[in-house]
Length: 184
Image (cartoon, rainbow, N blue to C red; front, side, top):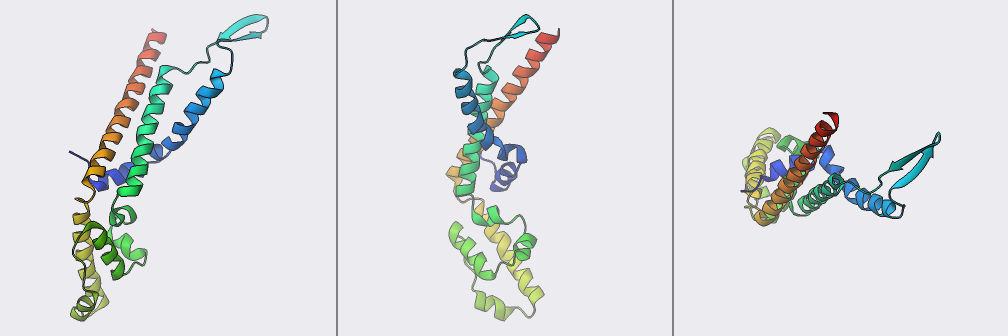
């Protein structure tokens, strides 16, 4: 069972997940830079020799895998999420952006929903308020229809997020165990 597009949008808008692109790039660069340095690094401070291990710990490797899962999920989400969901959280945000009824038809065409006959809709409504009310109903119908659009990608993105969270949880618990072992 895949997450809804709305849930995937919430995940994709999370500031920590958005920053995973950085880690997906930084970790390999750090690994390459550290591989060029003699390991372990021997420093002499105040006449004492200190040995510093410079290889990346396993948790960094796992963190990198998690960052890749999240980054690929973000990329796929931005490519395949229906535009009506990607661009609008609510009908109010749709109106506040100044989008027209013609935009609703573009959204409808994208997800295979029924288009609106704008001329008939305008003729049927007596005021802007009633037009907005009718448009709101159409907006939510298209929005609901969009949930069944690109199911395959929605499933793949959901799996990538789950994998990213599982690996991140593994890193978290691995570090907790390390702290307890070092402290006790």
